[in-house]
Image (cartoon, rainbow, N blue to C red):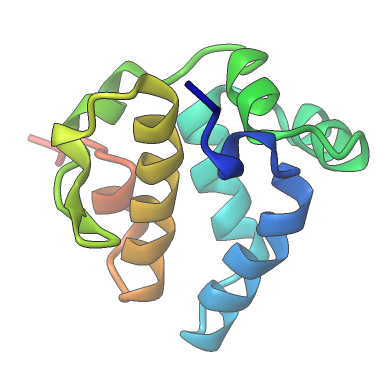
Length: 120
């Protein structure tokens, strides 16, 4: 079975599209980076290193320091598919990121996007 094309695409080639999508809706690069760091556990420096190295998506997620356990709380539809029903683990990770960026562009609050519990 051949790999899906996105697995071998450089994360750095898609990253500017995440930024553009967010900025069109009045959001910031910093918020996009916050989302990516929350999801993957990369520090800002590690994220920038991955971008500079033109790391592909498969390696980007394989080298992620600590995938956030709360990512399983991400629900909804992206590209016509429910992210919680995607069976291929790598594709699900990529779609989790897409969904988070989509939520940002839709104007959702960062606390909700990052699944931060409300204070008691």
